[in-house]
Length: 162
Image 1: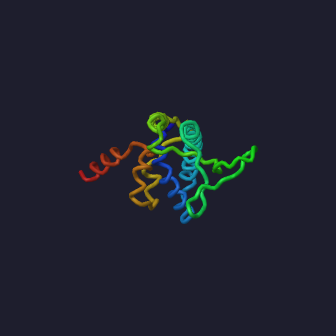
Image 2: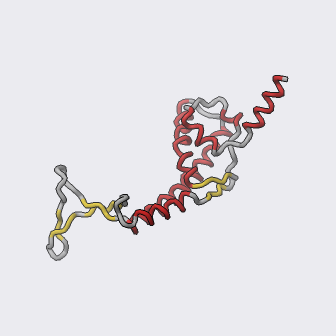
Image 3: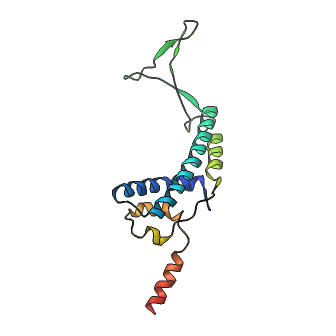
């Protein structure tokens, strides 16, 4: 089982996406592919849940955007009483200038710190990834799902040197 915060999952997602791209260029070992697919599925479902909750807060605390034309003028439409009103986009947002921004920020931070237990998912081992070529920028994300065996590897290297 792997336990991470939602914030960690957001950090991990781009690294997983790059691993998927690597596997398209050069297929990975079956067992690694299987483990990664389980991790990816768990991360995606947890993030979908987070984004739904976050969007709920934005709809509740934010404001709906008003449609504008190419020149930046507000697009007007007629309501049922034939009164002209600004056309709404259906997209909600919240800016730092919004009076509810601090409340949104605090609620979102609580969501980001929520611990997600990914059951039936196991950490990746260094040996499983050692042949995979990835940029160093992806390591912080991947370290979140790797077995804490780096110190063990160092110990083995020290033993070999002796």
